[in-house]
Amino acid sequence: MRQSKIGLHTFMAVPALVLFTLFFLLPLAQGIGMSFTDWDGLRTPNFVGLQNFFNFFKDTRALNDIKTTVLFALGSASLLNLVGLVYALIMDGKFRGKGLARVIIYLPAVISPLIMGYIWYFLLQPGRGFLSIAIKQLGHSEGLTNWMNTYCLQMLILVLVNVWQYTGMAMVIYLAGLQGIPKELYESAKIDGAGYGGQLRYVTLPLLLPSIRVNIVTNIIGSLAVFDVIMALTDGGPGYATESLSIYIMRMCYGAKTGYSTAVAMIMFLIILVPVVISMRLTRERK
Image (cartoon, rainbow, N blue to C red; front, top):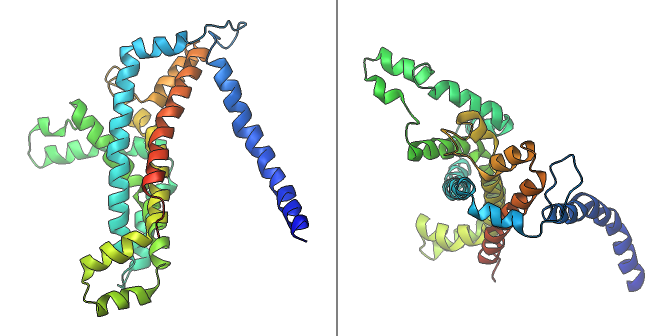
C-alpha cells in the first residue's frame, strides 16, 4: 500500500517536472551555452569562452548599472517590507472603512508599472509637470520643480514610486500571516504582562517569519530585475546614470550582441540568486 502511494505521488509530479524542465532548465542550459559565443542573433555563433564575462567587468557602464541596480534593490526591498508590515498591522485592527482603505493601498499594484511610471513622469516632469505648475502657481521658485537633477534624487524618486506601487502586495501577504496567528497567544502574552511592543517582538514577528520570507524573496527578485519604472521615468538617463542591468541586457541584445547580453543575464541571475539564498537561510523557521 505504501509503495503504491509513493508511485502515485511520483506519477502526479511528472507534469510539473516536465513543465519545469521545458520552461526553466532547458532555456537555462541554452542560455549558458549561448553566453560563451559571439552570436549577434543572425550569423552562426562562434565559441569565445569567457570573453563575454571579461568584457562585462571591463565595461564601466555595466559596472555603474550594477551599482544602480543594487542601490535600487536595497532601498526598494527594505522599504517595501517595512511599509508593508506597518500597513498590515494597521489594517489588521478594527476601524470603519478598513475594507476601502485596503483597496486604495492595493489598487496601484494592479496597474502596469510602465503606465504608472509614465503617470509619475507627467506629474514630476520639470517645468511642465502638474506639480511643477502647481508650485509655480503658489509663487515658489522654479528651481524647486526640478525633482530629478541629481543622481541621489533620481534614485530616491525611483525607489519611492516603486514602493508606492507595490506596498499593497507586501501588505496583503503580511495580513494573511497576521490573520493566521491564534488570538489566544496575544491573550496569554497580555496575562504575562507583555505590552504592544512585547507582543510584536515575541509573538507577531516570530510567527510572521513565513510571510517575511516570501516578501523578502519576491521583493529582492523584483527590485533587482527592475525595468519598467526606470524606462518610464528616466529611460536610464541622463546618459546611462540610472540604467539598470535589465535595461542594459535589452539594449545589448537589440544592439546585435545577443551572446554578450546572455552572458550578462547569467551574471544577473547569480546577483539575484545570492541574496535570495542568504535571506532564505536567515529567515528560515526555528522552533
